Length: 147
Ligand code: AMP
Image 1 (tube, rainbow, N blue to C red):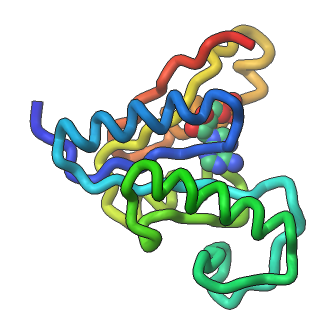
Image 2 (image 1 turned 180 degrees about the vertical axis):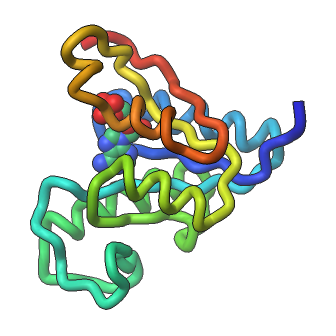
């Protein structure tokens, strides 16, 4: 198997995120790959940003909720030794932004968590399922423990 050179881990800041992030970190170390992190804001109003859907991490805003999300992402980045420039906070639809960023940044492996939904829940769609089916690169779906 050829080595991965750029791994992107998608985090939703759920309780199981650490598990997904640690797996991605271990893979990046094994392959000596660059590691990037993405978190997509889909449940707070779109902040005023001059960069389209990208939210700058090095500029303070007046939105406490946004500052809290930034702090979580930067904390995880620090934990995984990921450069601030490779920690991506975007506003939008998670599956679309993950796939778009992966293509734009020439990522060759996306790591997502998977809740292993079945039946109707699966039909309704999930972020991991959409990324798995539509990404142009390899996708690792890390099976999360059932709630
Ligand atoms: P889901 O299939 O929707 O339960 O999401 C499972 C996985 O999709 C999570 O473990 C993350 O890897 C990714 N994900 C879901 N929502 C987001 C988000 N807002 N930002 C980044 N990644 C996400």
